[in-house]
Length: 120
Image (tube, rainbow, N blue to C red; front, side, top):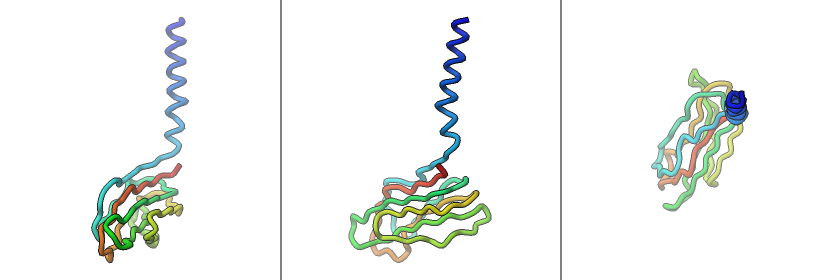
């Protein structure tokens, strides 16, 4: 009986630890890469409540990065562009994907620290 009780306790603890992570979803869909003008990446599809982009410009200039969200039929919000190094986009979409992109007019490479999205 003691062995069964330990097994039950282990299952309960695992459920408590694992279940909360199922309530929120996040993905870092790009990180630690140098992008040229026009480079982009999209996330997996899910319900999305944020899209964050962190970048730097070690090669000079003030290159821009952008972020958007698109629904499953391909309809997207307008791009939000910045050359500040961080974009915090907290628009939401019920089901679709996030995207980050280096502006096509950039004259310098941009170092993408990360593009991350989720709904937590």
